[in-house]
Length: 83
Image (cartoon, rainbow, N blue to C red; front, top):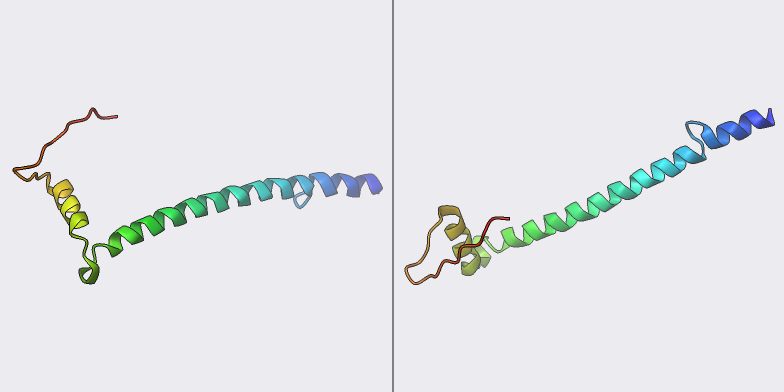
């Protein structure tokens, strides 16, 4: 009887090995969550600069030029190879 309970304490569905595996999954999920939170904060900060009450003209100019592939006549374009 002791062997039965000892085996299932280690190998069972709720045993020590399952607990270790689930702990690793939780750590990976938390790392992914932290990464996504950082990305979200970055996007929110950039979007906040585009609001009408706090409009950053440099950022707006950058987005317009990137979206429409436009250059000012005085601009210098430097082509780099794609990575």
